[in-house]
Length: 96
Image (cartoon, rainbow, N blue to C red; front, side, top):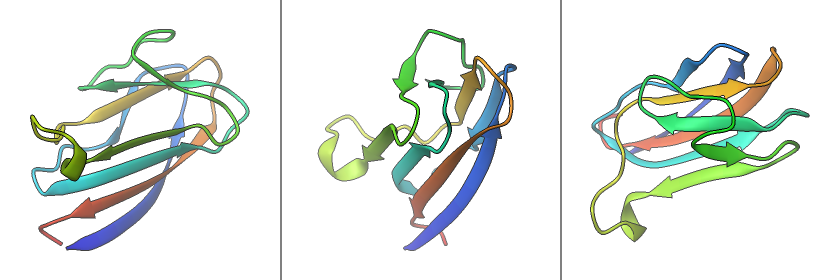
């Protein structure tokens, strides 16, 4: 099992920041910007809907070990009220 690290830029148009990965066992996304960011499980995020990660260090974490129904392994999309907002991403993968 390997740990992958990445960064993504989030803007005013929804975009996938974490692609689907059937081998995903944990995921951490940290908002490294001055603007709240909204996430969605799937290909499209909507501003002011879904999961909000607060500005300046807000986080989203998912771990297969503490979910009884399994972990979301599909894409994660993000959107923000302004462009050029950064997130840091860490993902553990069974297949790497």
